[in-house]
Image (cartoon, rainbow, N blue to C red):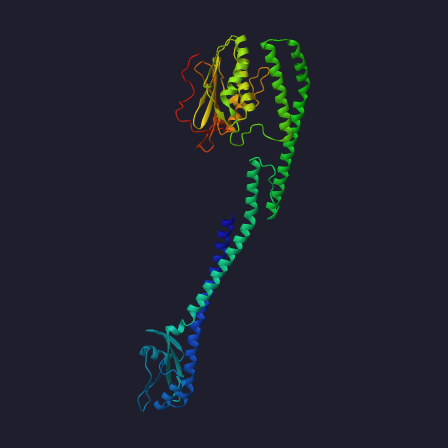
Length: 467
């Protein structure tokens, strides 16, 4: 916008300067020419009184010398009946032009080498006409024209520079609020909810800033309402959780009872975390410094130990690989556990009893890949399965499990992919990025994908066998 205003101002001012300066320059040139010929006519008029009195050469030469124009003036007196004609000064005009002036009896001009001549007829006492010739050089005709044109060019250039400077200042006055509005929108999009735009500049931009600030306030209010609602809904779960915790006390001893009590305790902790996070408006997934995160291998072993008891009851074959050594990832322990529970819960919920499943962990230099695969019927539409809130349509399916996994992976710069496993069912690949400085490339569903760790083969359809 700023440069557009400068260009428009430059074009308009240049057109105005040309429209006025060119005609004015031509007028100056014409005025200089008229001045030169007027001076020549005045010089010729000084000789006319002397010619009307005498035609004596000596006296006429003194008159021409007194006029100060002897170098550029000539007097042509026709021959009398009893004598010859008189020629004073240097003749530049052609004889035919001089004869024509005597015949016509009025002044005229003629072009000669180096300039022009003014031929002025003067009546003599004998009734004939003498011709006074005044030479006008080209330098006299253009005297002062160059200076006048230089002044006009300077004035025009000053006008153009001034108009461009004014247009640039106006453009800055308009562009600066627009840039602030863009920066505010970018900051708000990045999650900095305190971003506001100064309400200044032209009227339209001030109104846009007012509307933006009002929108930002509404977004903050809506998010606050959503957090309060999430906290309230989570708080309502305390009553049924309390009943469950009391009922687990009557289950007695045994692995199933211990697992049930551990699950209820974990559920209570998760509800407390949700309430605190909603109240404090802090993100759940955080890995904000050196050493932050968790050991993925340890978390996978822990969650597989929890699900293995249920797998044994349902006759499912389980395979676990890649967890024999620590694997550090920039993900909170609770978040990784929630993502694994979501995927393993889907296996138990959407595959028949006796269906085998496996969990593999692949550790690379700049990424960690967690694979959860099964021998079930598979997912017919992976894109629809990744859509938040879509669900499978069965009881207890909210469509949030895979979205939890996706958001965990994308928080590190990775992504989630669904494909066909070698077991014949679904394979969910969680790509957890370790180094955010790696090259980024776009993936579907807005995911961010980075380079595959060196030495890691493509994941889908990798050949492996169950024990």
